[in-house]
Length: 488
Image (tube, rainbow, N blue to C red; front, side, top):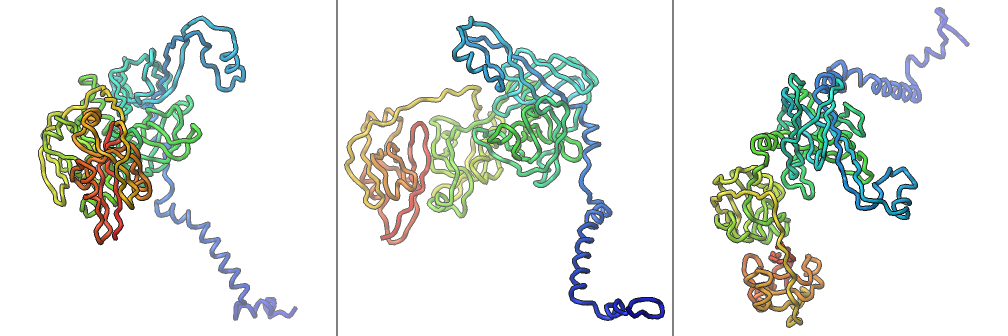
């Protein structure tokens, strides 16, 4: 190989003047790998490294407690439940000799957080429900017997008191300032492992869950498991923003969906429990449903919003204020109601006896009313009603596949309605819309249905397709069903 005077091979000298295509690709690839390797370092240099939870956990951990409960259960001559891992437990319970009635203890674990230095704690209602004995264990191994000051099942919040002073306590944050995507930290006792720290982000705010109408849950992807219930959720300032309550799971363990009660809701409940031992909530006496795109179109609303009133309690606060069936509540106490699940929370948070303004959408225009909020009773008995007795079909409404008949006076009295027709059969368009056999159609687009002829007239199709809203009585409740009528 020929060389220059300095000993450099001539082959290398050629590439210095003009880089080959292959060498250029190799250099670009190496530069790309180097950039990927240097990128985290550049973020750290700019102060954008991953968060460190160590200081938060060290400072706030002592205010988080482990809660263990015991409950005495009286057996009824059967063997008490054994371990799920015991292969003989179920066999002896089924085929073993009869056992005399006896008492046995069940145990459960949860978490809690100290909110005052003199021993008041927050936890979940379901953690201490029906407990005979409650033990609170601190991180320094001190143990105390706890007393339940009050418990509210609707929000799943309970207040406990232990006989101690000078305790570490947490700072309370503002959950309304939380942003989706923000880091949050949970501390609790999953499966009994005390003071376990997990972290994640806020996945959503104001989340509504089935059968949970009074809490705008904070959804996170923080790992929460059995035993975390009642423990605190912290923001990065070390402030409590929520009380961990439940998870969504198909397996019983964490699957990336956990829910916390906003701390402002929890503190409001706690103050009422401490003051009176109960929680007072507002009510207005309406049954509501979501406003769909089709229903908004049928009522002439510019967009789907608000809460559609499909039933008004006779003599209740809403009835006295002039709220009517088919009204869409757009505002309550000057708070906009974007969807139906927001109304129960806003009403419940209003003190009973308060006089507030309500804005409704009625027959194509907004109307402002004044309402005096009532109080939700502690226990509400559900009134049972029977389905109306059917008569043979007297008329079929053509293309809609709807067969109806008029109600007798006895049937109206039995189901407590003034008018309507009962559905004998629903097929085709009416069935696809959600009309069912046994439904009582009471109104079409705010116009009362008193007879089969009324319904025929109100469902007459013109030249243009349109959507109408059927007010339907089904079982013990009412709802609106959007029905699309096609043109001729």
